[in-house]
Image (cartoon, rainbow, N blue to C red; front, side, top):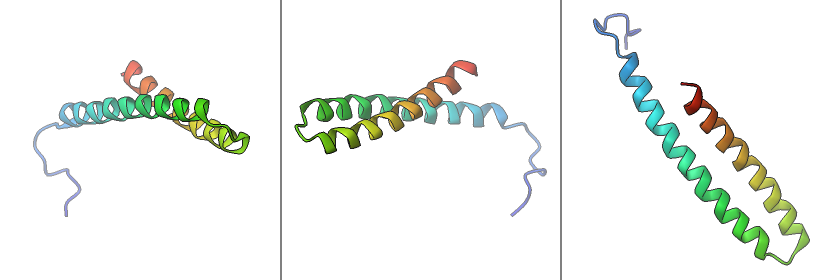
Length: 74
C-alpha cells in the first residue's frame, strides 16, 4: 500500500464532497433521533428513565451541533 504520493491528480475536492454528504446524512440521522428521543422522554412516566433519556438527548444534540457546525463552516 502506497502513501498516496503516487496519485497524479488532486482528489481533495472529491473527498471533501464525499465527507460533506456523509456529514449531511449524519445530521439528518441526529435530527431524527432527537425527535424520537424527545417523544419517548416526554411520554415516559419513570423519572429514572426520563433522566437517562435526557442524557441521551444531550449527546445527540451535541452531535447535531457538531455536524451542523462543520457543514456551516465549510
